[in-house]
Length: 187
Image 1 (spheres, rainbow, N blue to C red):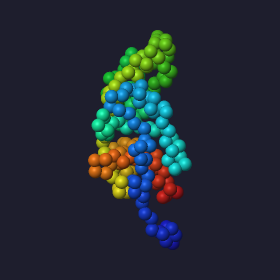
Image 2 (cartoon, rainbow, N blue to C red; image 1 turned 90 degrees about the vertical axis):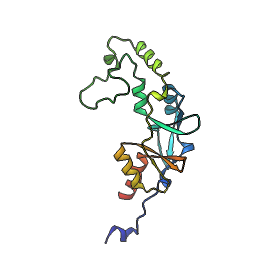
Image 3 (cartoon, helix red, strand yellow; image 1 turned 180 degrees about the vertical axis):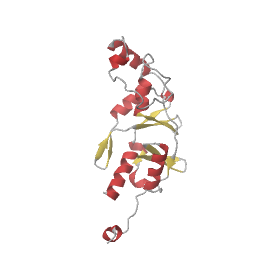
Image 4 (cartoon, rainbow, N blue to C red; image 1 turned 90 degrees about the horizontal axis):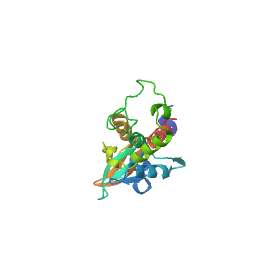
């Protein structure tokens, strides 16, 4: 007996069925700072179905309410790294897993006191969000199937994709929700 015979025909869900509406998703303005983004990220809580989580990404809107980019958690953390600790310019991606780093901030900061490190972090909070934001690499339509989200997220290494209809942004789809839907289908 086939799976289809046991359960009936399978219909893949559409993006509209799993997206988070725009009015429920956290965002910042193009004119905001890293400190503003940090506050929004800290205070944001998303509940999808019965699953609660913190956002991994903030949307960035201009003063015309147009979506112009995104800011990821790691972008904020990288942007807050005080210049005195930076070994590379902030726009260069850091190499992953090539060397083992000592993760103690006091070791990374050398002879700097905790107060000096904290002062450097606070100074970086005033940097504009435009220093760290990423442009939008792709969008989805509400009628797209789940597998299109899988393909786009994997091929572009994105964890969040905006859902648009015409010129209007309706919401976003997160990788965690896509993976949950796949698990519901397969396990």
